[in-house]
Image (tube, rainbow, N blue to C red; front, side, top):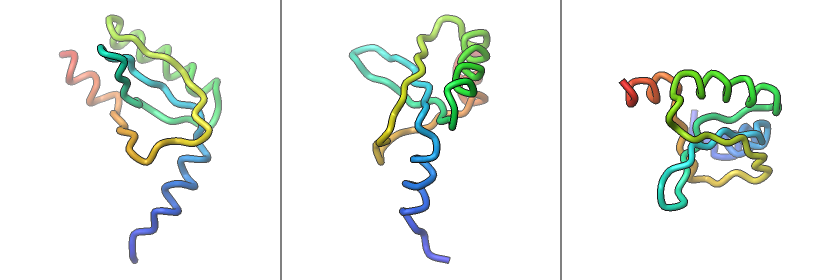
Length: 81
């Protein structure tokens, strides 16, 4: 089955709440996308416990960029260890 980029865009529109990790020089990395604010807040609490020295923020992103990079929690944990 051919790759359909419309499915990705539609899926991203379903998840407007994002957790972004704030990096130096005004950069950021999208850590996760969520359907509701409460889901994002719950995941943010876990991230802050797992990676206390990092800065995270919950943001509403109604029109996501095509070039966002997602990082899983297990990847973030490996980077800290």
